[in-house]
Image (cartoon, rainbow, N blue to C red):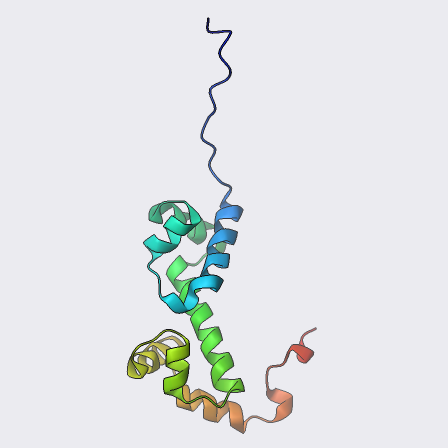
Length: 135
């Protein structure tokens, strides 16, 4: 009777590149929600340990580090290209406390959000980041 039964399906593990891709996509969708790594892992369909190890091995950075870097990129874009107040930017990025956002930003960049805005404004147009300047 063993010949009548089909092959036993094995659970296949997702490829690391797929996990990383799904994680980064989920970060883009939920960046402002301030999810925990465990929540991202559940959304991706892996354990938090598997997400951490896979992302670390694939990118050389932890998932939290990638989330924070993406948050800083978004903050920079809003600081440089909008007239929103820092408190409004904090709210836009999901921070309930503008002071906490300012501390977060300074911890990751070494400068305050207001300093970033002043430094950006003082640069000439040729020194500003632009998609047109990309190779």
